[in-house]
Length: 187
Image (cartoon, rainbow, N blue to C red; front, top):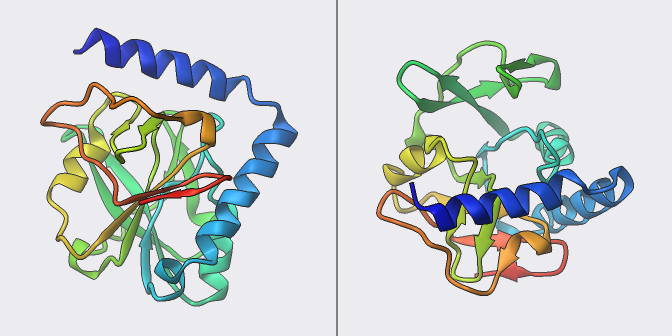
């Protein structure tokens, strides 16, 4: 694996992990509200999102509001044997559990990717060219690679996670269509 990628991931992860609770919650709230005000959210019916952990941008408000707006919410069900994620519908926040420290649906209720309108993609670091580096397992890259073109991929990120230099990505890394931070939207 690319040593430069590993170094960048470790550096940004360390900064993210040291975010004070109040700052993490405040910036997450700004990012979620910004997402919820977009036409992408308003016009979507089926959303595939992650549930935050390890100081990732929170997604709890997005999930709660989606339920209120009668949208279908999917979380990644991880098949550890095949090293893939499967969008799985949840009907309530109570259907979320932790497996190997990662929040996901308690039960597998698969949703066909053709029915998904947008995917909210986590990432450790992004660049202004919409490239991303995740946690290193390649789960999201493998999933995003085979998505129909019409499905929008949105990264949620704190501003400090977005760098101006192009990330050292390779053919396995998938970019997002836009990135939403507490300060801007990058197209």
